[in-house]
Figure 1 (cartoon, helix red, strand yellow):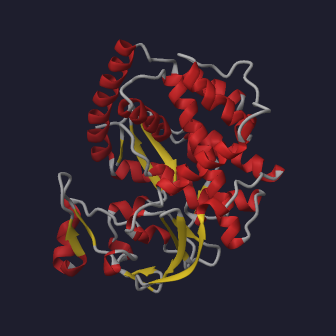
Figure 2 (tube, helix red, strand yellow; figure 1 turned 90 degrees about the vertical axis):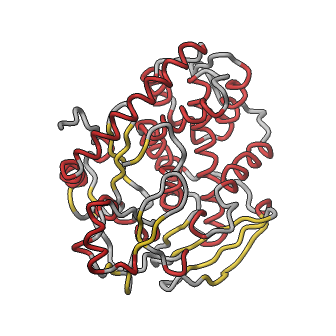
Length: 371
Protein backbone atom coordinates (compact mmCIF):
# COMPACT_ATOMS: atom_id res chain seq x y z
CA UNK A 1 0.00 0.00 0.00
CA UNK A 2 1.53 3.33 -1.04
CA UNK A 3 1.25 6.37 1.21
CA UNK A 4 1.05 9.59 -0.82
CA UNK A 5 2.86 12.79 0.02
CA UNK A 6 4.67 12.09 3.28
CA UNK A 7 5.91 15.46 4.52
CA UNK A 8 9.64 15.44 5.36
CA UNK A 9 10.04 19.23 5.26
CA UNK A 10 11.00 19.60 8.94
CA UNK A 11 13.99 17.34 8.31
CA UNK A 12 15.35 19.16 5.27
CA UNK A 13 19.00 20.02 5.74
CA UNK A 14 19.18 18.35 9.16
CA UNK A 15 21.45 15.54 10.33
CA UNK A 16 21.12 13.20 13.28
CA UNK A 17 23.57 11.09 15.23
CA UNK A 18 23.46 9.01 18.41
CA UNK A 19 26.05 10.52 20.80
CA UNK A 20 27.88 8.24 23.21
CA UNK A 21 26.77 8.62 26.81
CA UNK A 22 23.35 10.13 26.11
CA UNK A 23 20.63 7.48 26.49
CA UNK A 24 17.86 10.10 26.55
CA UNK A 25 15.64 8.08 24.23
CA UNK A 26 16.03 5.08 26.55
CA UNK A 27 13.93 6.93 29.13
CA UNK A 28 10.94 6.62 26.79
CA UNK A 29 9.21 3.27 27.38
CA UNK A 30 8.96 1.77 23.87
CA UNK A 31 6.11 -0.38 22.65
CA UNK A 32 7.02 -3.86 21.39
CA UNK A 33 5.05 -4.67 18.25
CA UNK A 34 3.36 -8.09 17.90
CA UNK A 35 5.83 -9.19 15.20
CA UNK A 36 8.72 -8.32 17.54
CA UNK A 37 7.43 -10.33 20.48
CA UNK A 38 8.87 -13.62 19.17
CA UNK A 39 12.42 -12.36 19.70
CA UNK A 40 11.71 -11.24 23.27
CA UNK A 41 9.79 -14.40 24.22
CA UNK A 42 12.71 -16.43 22.98
CA UNK A 43 15.60 -14.31 24.28
CA UNK A 44 14.49 -11.77 26.92
CA UNK A 45 11.02 -12.62 28.28
CA UNK A 46 11.93 -11.00 31.60
CA UNK A 47 12.33 -7.60 29.93
CA UNK A 48 8.78 -7.21 28.59
CA UNK A 49 5.64 -6.10 30.39
CA UNK A 50 2.06 -5.40 29.36
CA UNK A 51 0.39 -2.08 30.01
CA UNK A 52 -3.04 -1.82 31.55
CA UNK A 53 -6.04 0.05 30.29
CA UNK A 54 -7.99 0.30 27.07
CA UNK A 55 -4.92 0.63 24.84
CA UNK A 56 -3.09 -2.33 26.33
CA UNK A 57 0.14 -3.34 24.61
CA UNK A 58 3.53 -4.90 25.29
CA UNK A 59 6.49 -2.69 26.06
CA UNK A 60 9.97 -2.90 27.54
CA UNK A 61 10.37 -2.66 31.30
CA UNK A 62 12.07 0.30 32.97
CA UNK A 63 14.59 0.06 35.79
CA UNK A 64 12.70 0.30 39.10
CA UNK A 65 9.65 1.19 37.05
CA UNK A 66 10.84 4.75 36.47
CA UNK A 67 14.40 4.78 35.16
CA UNK A 68 15.90 3.87 31.84
CA UNK A 69 15.15 0.75 29.82
CA UNK A 70 16.28 -2.43 31.58
CA UNK A 71 18.28 -3.29 28.45
CA UNK A 72 20.50 -0.21 28.78
CA UNK A 73 23.94 -0.92 30.27
CA UNK A 74 26.56 1.78 30.57
CA UNK A 75 24.38 4.00 28.40
CA UNK A 76 24.52 1.43 25.61
CA UNK A 77 21.73 -0.81 24.32
CA UNK A 78 22.50 -4.50 24.91
CA UNK A 79 20.20 -5.63 22.07
CA UNK A 80 20.90 -2.80 19.63
CA UNK A 81 20.64 -4.95 16.49
CA UNK A 82 17.25 -6.30 17.66
CA UNK A 83 15.82 -3.18 19.29
CA UNK A 84 12.09 -2.48 18.73
CA UNK A 85 10.81 -0.33 15.89
CA UNK A 86 9.95 2.49 18.26
CA UNK A 87 13.61 2.69 19.33
CA UNK A 88 14.79 2.65 15.71
CA UNK A 89 12.50 5.55 14.83
CA UNK A 90 13.85 7.93 17.47
CA UNK A 91 14.38 10.91 17.02
CA UNK A 92 11.85 10.78 14.14
CA UNK A 93 8.15 11.01 14.98
CA UNK A 94 5.65 9.95 12.32
CA UNK A 95 2.44 11.88 12.79
CA UNK A 96 -0.84 10.78 11.23
CA UNK A 97 -3.29 13.63 10.72
CA UNK A 98 -4.97 14.20 7.40
CA UNK A 99 -1.58 13.20 5.98
CA UNK A 100 1.63 11.65 7.31
CA UNK A 101 4.35 14.06 8.39
CA UNK A 102 7.70 13.42 10.04
CA UNK A 103 8.83 15.58 12.94
CA UNK A 104 12.25 15.75 14.54
CA UNK A 105 12.53 15.42 18.31
CA UNK A 106 14.67 18.42 19.24
CA UNK A 107 15.13 17.09 22.78
CA UNK A 108 17.69 14.74 21.22
CA UNK A 109 21.13 16.33 21.45
CA UNK A 110 22.19 14.31 18.44
CA UNK A 111 20.19 16.57 16.11
CA UNK A 112 22.04 19.70 17.22
CA UNK A 113 25.62 18.68 16.41
CA UNK A 114 25.42 18.99 12.62
CA UNK A 115 26.92 15.51 12.33
CA UNK A 116 25.53 12.10 11.46
CA UNK A 117 23.19 10.75 8.82
CA UNK A 118 20.94 12.78 6.57
CA UNK A 119 17.71 13.01 8.59
CA UNK A 120 15.32 12.96 5.63
CA UNK A 121 16.99 9.91 4.09
CA UNK A 122 16.88 8.01 7.38
CA UNK A 123 13.22 8.88 7.86
CA UNK A 124 12.33 7.74 4.34
CA UNK A 125 13.93 4.36 5.00
CA UNK A 126 12.01 4.04 8.27
CA UNK A 127 8.75 5.01 6.56
CA UNK A 128 9.27 2.37 3.90
CA UNK A 129 9.83 -0.29 6.57
CA UNK A 130 6.64 0.76 8.39
CA UNK A 131 4.45 1.48 5.37
CA UNK A 132 1.57 -0.82 6.30
CA UNK A 133 1.30 0.58 9.85
CA UNK A 134 1.47 4.15 8.59
CA UNK A 135 -1.21 3.49 5.99
CA UNK A 136 -3.55 1.94 8.56
CA UNK A 137 -3.10 4.86 10.97
CA UNK A 138 -3.57 7.41 8.18
CA UNK A 139 -6.89 5.86 7.19
CA UNK A 140 -8.17 6.15 10.77
CA UNK A 141 -6.78 9.62 11.45
CA UNK A 142 -8.12 11.00 8.15
CA UNK A 143 -11.62 10.01 9.20
CA UNK A 144 -11.16 11.77 12.55
CA UNK A 145 -9.96 14.92 10.78
CA UNK A 146 -12.90 14.88 8.37
CA UNK A 147 -15.31 14.62 11.30
CA UNK A 148 -13.50 17.44 13.10
CA UNK A 149 -13.67 19.78 10.10
CA UNK A 150 -17.37 19.01 9.70
CA UNK A 151 -18.05 19.92 13.33
CA UNK A 152 -16.06 23.16 12.95
CA UNK A 153 -18.07 24.20 9.90
CA UNK A 154 -21.34 23.49 11.67
CA UNK A 155 -20.19 25.46 14.73
CA UNK A 156 -19.03 28.39 12.56
CA UNK A 157 -15.44 28.26 13.87
CA UNK A 158 -13.69 26.95 10.75
CA UNK A 159 -10.80 29.02 9.35
CA UNK A 160 -8.22 28.65 6.60
CA UNK A 161 -5.26 26.89 8.25
CA UNK A 162 -2.83 28.00 5.51
CA UNK A 163 -3.84 31.64 6.00
CA UNK A 164 -3.41 31.35 9.78
CA UNK A 165 0.08 29.91 9.38
CA UNK A 166 1.09 32.47 6.77
CA UNK A 167 -0.06 35.32 9.01
CA UNK A 168 1.90 33.96 11.97
CA UNK A 169 4.97 33.47 9.79
CA UNK A 170 4.77 37.10 8.63
CA UNK A 171 4.75 38.27 12.27
CA UNK A 172 7.00 35.63 13.77
CA UNK A 173 9.63 38.02 15.14
CA UNK A 174 6.97 39.61 17.40
CA UNK A 175 6.17 36.29 19.09
CA UNK A 176 9.33 36.53 21.19
CA UNK A 177 7.91 39.67 22.86
CA UNK A 178 5.70 39.09 25.94
CA UNK A 179 3.96 42.42 25.24
CA UNK A 180 2.86 41.10 21.86
CA UNK A 181 1.74 37.79 23.34
CA UNK A 182 -0.31 39.72 25.89
CA UNK A 183 -2.05 41.61 23.09
CA UNK A 184 -2.88 38.36 21.25
CA UNK A 185 -4.22 36.67 24.36
CA UNK A 186 -6.49 39.64 25.07
CA UNK A 187 -7.72 39.84 21.47
CA UNK A 188 -8.36 36.09 21.26
CA UNK A 189 -10.85 36.46 24.12
CA UNK A 190 -12.41 39.70 22.90
CA UNK A 191 -12.85 39.18 19.15
CA UNK A 192 -15.02 36.45 17.57
CA UNK A 193 -12.39 35.92 14.85
CA UNK A 194 -9.09 37.65 15.36
CA UNK A 195 -6.31 38.42 12.89
CA UNK A 196 -2.71 39.52 13.36
CA UNK A 197 -3.10 42.32 10.84
CA UNK A 198 -2.00 45.68 12.32
CA UNK A 199 -1.61 44.02 15.73
CA UNK A 200 1.15 45.57 17.83
CA UNK A 201 2.63 44.86 21.27
CA UNK A 202 0.71 46.23 24.25
CA UNK A 203 3.05 48.77 25.94
CA UNK A 204 0.88 48.74 29.07
CA UNK A 205 0.61 44.98 29.45
CA UNK A 206 0.59 43.44 32.92
CA UNK A 207 4.05 41.85 33.20
CA UNK A 208 3.16 40.06 36.44
CA UNK A 209 0.10 38.52 34.83
CA UNK A 210 2.14 37.26 31.87
CA UNK A 211 4.78 35.85 34.20
CA UNK A 212 2.05 34.03 36.12
CA UNK A 213 0.62 32.60 32.88
CA UNK A 214 4.08 31.42 31.79
CA UNK A 215 4.77 29.83 35.16
CA UNK A 216 1.39 28.09 35.28
CA UNK A 217 1.90 26.65 31.79
CA UNK A 218 5.29 25.22 32.74
CA UNK A 219 4.22 23.91 36.14
CA UNK A 220 1.28 22.00 34.69
CA UNK A 221 3.67 19.49 33.12
CA UNK A 222 5.74 19.15 36.31
CA UNK A 223 2.85 18.41 38.65
CA UNK A 224 3.09 14.60 38.73
CA UNK A 225 4.81 12.60 41.46
CA UNK A 226 5.68 9.94 38.87
CA UNK A 227 9.16 10.51 37.34
CA UNK A 228 7.89 8.88 34.13
CA UNK A 229 5.32 11.67 33.72
CA UNK A 230 7.40 14.83 34.27
CA UNK A 231 9.88 16.72 32.07
CA UNK A 232 13.40 15.36 31.72
CA UNK A 233 16.31 17.56 30.73
CA UNK A 234 19.37 15.81 29.35
CA UNK A 235 22.19 18.13 30.40
CA UNK A 236 25.34 18.96 28.53
CA UNK A 237 27.12 16.42 30.74
CA UNK A 238 24.50 13.78 29.75
CA UNK A 239 22.91 13.93 33.21
CA UNK A 240 19.20 13.05 33.39
CA UNK A 241 17.58 15.93 35.25
CA UNK A 242 14.05 15.49 36.62
CA UNK A 243 11.84 18.40 37.71
CA UNK A 244 8.77 17.95 39.92
CA UNK A 245 6.43 20.63 41.25
CA UNK A 246 4.42 20.32 44.44
CA UNK A 247 2.64 23.10 46.36
CA UNK A 248 4.35 25.70 44.20
CA UNK A 249 7.87 24.42 44.85
CA UNK A 250 10.05 22.81 42.18
CA UNK A 251 12.44 20.02 43.14
CA UNK A 252 15.38 19.23 40.85
CA UNK A 253 16.75 15.68 41.01
CA UNK A 254 19.24 13.73 38.93
CA UNK A 255 18.43 10.16 37.96
CA UNK A 256 21.30 7.71 37.63
CA UNK A 257 21.61 4.70 35.33
CA UNK A 258 20.08 2.41 37.96
CA UNK A 259 16.90 4.50 38.24
CA UNK A 260 17.80 6.06 41.60
CA UNK A 261 17.18 9.76 42.11
CA UNK A 262 19.32 12.26 44.04
CA UNK A 263 17.84 15.61 44.99
CA UNK A 264 20.09 18.45 43.82
CA UNK A 265 18.10 21.55 44.74
CA UNK A 266 14.73 23.24 44.88
CA UNK A 267 13.14 26.63 44.45
CA UNK A 268 9.79 28.29 44.98
CA UNK A 269 8.33 28.73 41.51
CA UNK A 270 7.38 32.33 42.25
CA UNK A 271 11.06 33.07 42.93
CA UNK A 272 11.90 32.32 39.28
CA UNK A 273 11.14 35.50 37.32
CA UNK A 274 10.44 35.45 33.59
CA UNK A 275 13.83 36.65 32.45
CA UNK A 276 14.24 38.93 29.40
CA UNK A 277 15.58 37.39 26.22
CA UNK A 278 18.90 38.40 24.74
CA UNK A 279 18.92 39.17 21.02
CA UNK A 280 20.57 35.85 20.12
CA UNK A 281 17.97 34.08 22.25
CA UNK A 282 15.17 35.79 20.34
CA UNK A 283 16.63 34.58 17.05
CA UNK A 284 16.72 30.89 17.99
CA UNK A 285 13.31 31.14 19.66
CA UNK A 286 11.80 32.55 16.47
CA UNK A 287 13.36 29.72 14.45
CA UNK A 288 11.75 27.23 16.83
CA UNK A 289 8.38 28.98 16.55
CA UNK A 290 8.70 28.60 12.78
CA UNK A 291 9.21 24.86 13.25
CA UNK A 292 6.12 24.61 15.46
CA UNK A 293 4.11 26.65 12.97
CA UNK A 294 4.82 23.99 10.34
CA UNK A 295 4.18 20.95 12.53
CA UNK A 296 1.04 18.95 11.93
CA UNK A 297 1.14 17.72 15.53
CA UNK A 298 0.97 21.31 16.80
CA UNK A 299 -2.07 21.82 14.59
CA UNK A 300 -3.51 18.57 15.96
CA UNK A 301 -3.04 19.91 19.48
CA UNK A 302 -4.89 23.10 18.54
CA UNK A 303 -7.73 20.96 17.19
CA UNK A 304 -7.74 18.88 20.38
CA UNK A 305 -7.98 22.11 22.40
CA UNK A 306 -10.95 23.28 20.29
CA UNK A 307 -12.69 19.97 20.89
CA UNK A 308 -11.97 20.08 24.63
CA UNK A 309 -13.40 23.61 24.87
CA UNK A 310 -16.56 22.69 22.99
CA UNK A 311 -15.91 24.54 19.70
CA UNK A 312 -16.63 27.93 21.27
CA UNK A 313 -13.70 29.83 19.75
CA UNK A 314 -12.66 30.35 16.16
CA UNK A 315 -9.79 28.23 14.90
CA UNK A 316 -7.57 31.29 14.42
CA UNK A 317 -8.12 32.46 18.01
CA UNK A 318 -7.27 29.02 19.39
CA UNK A 319 -4.22 28.62 17.13
CA UNK A 320 -2.66 31.94 18.09
CA UNK A 321 -3.57 31.40 21.74
CA UNK A 322 -1.94 27.97 21.81
CA UNK A 323 1.22 29.39 20.26
CA UNK A 324 1.33 32.14 22.90
CA UNK A 325 1.05 29.62 25.74
CA UNK A 326 3.74 27.46 24.14
CA UNK A 327 6.18 30.36 23.84
CA UNK A 328 5.53 31.51 27.40
CA UNK A 329 6.03 27.97 28.70
CA UNK A 330 9.38 27.68 26.93
CA UNK A 331 10.55 31.13 28.06
CA UNK A 332 9.77 30.32 31.70
CA UNK A 333 11.54 26.96 31.43
CA UNK A 334 14.55 28.79 30.03
CA UNK A 335 14.40 31.07 33.08
CA UNK A 336 14.24 28.03 35.39
CA UNK A 337 17.21 26.37 33.69
CA UNK A 338 19.09 29.62 34.08
CA UNK A 339 18.31 29.55 37.81
CA UNK A 340 19.71 26.04 38.27
CA UNK A 341 22.37 25.85 35.54
CA UNK A 342 23.18 29.49 34.68
CA UNK A 343 22.49 28.85 31.00
CA UNK A 344 21.38 32.43 30.34
CA UNK A 345 18.73 33.74 27.97
CA UNK A 346 20.85 33.98 24.85
CA UNK A 347 21.31 31.46 22.04
CA UNK A 348 22.77 28.78 24.32
CA UNK A 349 20.10 29.20 26.99
CA UNK A 350 17.16 29.04 24.58
CA UNK A 351 18.68 26.04 22.79
CA UNK A 352 18.88 24.26 26.15
CA UNK A 353 15.27 25.21 26.86
CA UNK A 354 14.19 23.73 23.51
CA UNK A 355 16.09 20.52 24.35
CA UNK A 356 14.23 20.49 27.68
CA UNK A 357 10.84 21.31 26.16
CA UNK A 358 10.43 19.71 22.74
CA UNK A 359 9.74 16.15 23.87
CA UNK A 360 6.87 17.48 26.00
CA UNK A 361 5.59 19.47 23.02
CA UNK A 362 5.53 16.29 20.92
CA UNK A 363 3.68 14.51 23.73
CA UNK A 364 0.88 17.10 23.81
CA UNK A 365 -2.58 15.61 23.14
CA UNK A 366 -3.81 15.79 19.55
CA UNK A 367 -6.72 14.49 17.49
CA UNK A 368 -4.23 12.62 15.30
CA UNK A 369 -1.70 10.02 16.39
CA UNK A 370 2.01 9.34 16.40
CA UNK A 371 2.83 6.01 14.80
